[in-house]
Image (cartoon, rainbow, N blue to C red):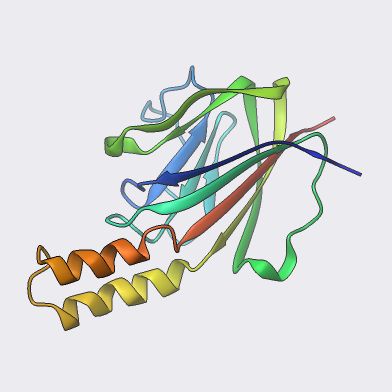
Length: 167
């Protein structure tokens, strides 16, 4: 039975409707990166995992987990699931584009090598729908009522990223 080695829960501000997980030595904006995950949950290449969000203005919740082997599937608790693989040199970073870096150089117990990745998402469409409704209820998006309701949506769209060293 696999066991969880690490769990990190953080808010993430998606940039251009995505955030990226990669080795800290990799420039996520360098040529040769994955295509943006338009219409899909993830897009990957050897050293980067790009996660598609439906948000640009609202922070999402990311739960990042490292396991010592393949974790049990999460099942019905999530709306979407995607799988991929990434090569890491014993550390990872979470990049939010123009919003900055959420995590830089998080050390992994698994060390250098290929990692399997499973990504789950929930409430993506719900948050988009509710955010759109705010504009119908409030004339001023800079007003207090609008901003309070917008803050209530933060973290409702959530992601679980599980990774483990492949044998």
